[in-house]
Image (cartoon, rainbow over all chains, first blue to last red; front, side, top):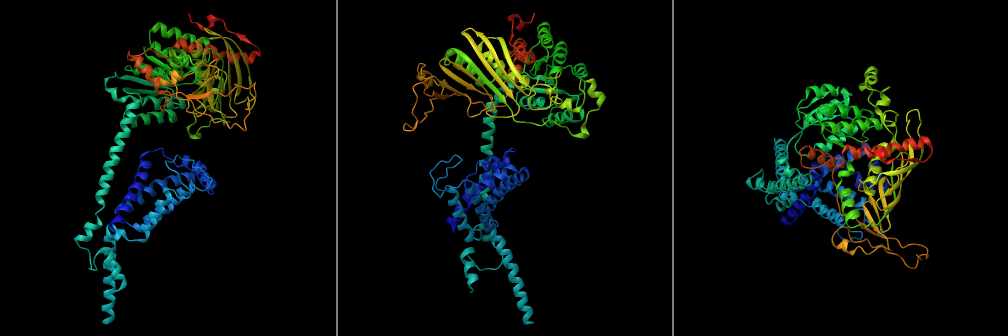
Amino acid sequence: MIALVVMRVLIGWHFLYEGVAKLLKPDWSAAGYLKVAKGPLAGLFQSMANNQDVLAWVNFLNMWGLTLIGLGLILGCLTRYAAIGGACMVLLYYFANPPFIGYFSSQATEGSYLLVNKNLVEIGALFVIAVTYSGRYIGLDRIFYRLLRRRRRTVAEQELTGAAV
Amino acid sequence: MSEKDDKDLQETGSDRKGIDRRDILQGMATLPVLGLFGYAVHKQVSYENAQVAQTLGTAQASNLKEVNVALLGAGAQGQVLLDAMLKCPNVRFRAVCDIWTDYNLKKVVNILKKYNFNVNGYEDYREMLDKEKDIDAVVIATPDFWHSQHAVDCLKAGKHVYCEKEMSNTLEGARQMVLTARETGKFLQIGHQRRSNPRYKYCYNKLIKEAKLLGRIVTVNGQWNRAVQPDLGYPKRYEIPADKLKQYGFKNMEQFRNWRWYKGLGGGPIVDLGSHQIDIYNWFLEANPVAVVASGGNDYYSPETREWYDTAMVVYEYETPQGRARAYYQTQTTNSSLGYFERFMGDQGTLVISESDANYANAIYREVTAPAWDEWVQKGYVTAPKVVEVKEEKTVLDVRESVSPDEHKIPVEFADLYHRPHLLNFFNTVRGLEKLNCPSEVGYESAVTVLKVNEAIQAGRRLEFRPEEFEVS
């Protein structure tokens, strides 16, 4: 369980800084990234970049999505939702520049990838986090869970006593 | 114990009811990570800020004398200069002047207030000169036809002046500016900002003069191509009253917004765009031209709203210290292909330079017949050549064809606001630390060179320059 928490915190840190770094740059925009998208969904990503209204939303969701997911993973707060949300986001990044056979990345990369790249590895790791309960071991979820459970039990006990009476 | 409780025990270590100390501790165990994260981000941000401060030269700012500045003309170009000036150390803004009081003036005054400059806004520059006695320098970014009067009055009021190019739309106006600068002994810098650009200075001083990598420059070509653009509009509720527009020399709001295209107010694209680059021709060739032929016209836009030529193609003849040279320049406003650059072609090499970081520009190519540049690569004057792979079986060079030359990059990064070095040169000259990179005499030579193009298009024939045309006496 400790190992899962460590992995969760590391991934959370990665997300949080990706988000915070963008928030700190007032002129940051996903437009450049989207415009050079490759692969089967390239058209979709490029159309996002070309529509100013859509782009504004994409930028907003990206910056705050990364930041909040990062916080969630580090603190173990709503861990499952954070992990699933994070996996979906990274999946979009994966498809924006997929290391498919014959494609070359339009972004500078520091390694050699075929089908599997670091994005996909991160998705895999987030999947593990989503199906385990590391937040209930170390994380705010533990407190939430306890609170909810206590309430549920009390209600259940009351019902039980009520039924007895 | 149910299966659920079993799982619960595994995850949280107990099936107790309620929250105990252990739950709180384990629940918040990762909180310190956020503290560490905050510390790391703080360190990173300070590092980045220090890097920026270093490139901006604000580190040694405290030693610099403060210069009190007024901005005259707060439109699009005035705001470009403002952005650059806000990154010049120890510049104190005192006043802003613009006739579009409800819009540009208000906007710029508000920006400056955000930067803690307590500036006064004026509509009339004479009132500003009367009231603001502390101003050392005025930065002028008004329409071309106002430059001469504004600059002359500011100089006479004892202010140093940075005036946007084109220094005037008439040579008489430009002449008065040079004469007044001489009489008053005040500095007058003309806004040909490439004159202070580290990359241009490097190419001229190091590559052309010292290493002589181009050999003898025989031909030059350059361009500024722009995509189709609609006329500039304006928010209806901020329309300037007709009588006020008239007072300042404009027929209507459309003309006020698009003055660059009107005869008598501006000079059209050849003057707005071309003058920057043709100024570099004169500089790098170390000569003023002896003749010009030009073709141009209102080929695309309606001459009703765009009186000046939307397309111009120009050939200058030069007699340089090294011999004769011809220089081609084109500007068109209907297709932006390849943007803007200048290309100097000598018998030993080609220099393609641009103010922008376009990837086809800012490189130097060695002619295959020229002596090797190994020495200059080793000294770091140019980068090692980019190896161009030739697929032999497919490419068979004809004996009459030349092998394509090696491409070397110019090792000068310039990631700054384009106008900042030129403004900094002006402020440092006012402080007595530097000499102007584009004093009014140089701006005048450039104005003579460029304004002749419109004349040549109108005349439809080759026009010659007399050497004395470039002098002011």
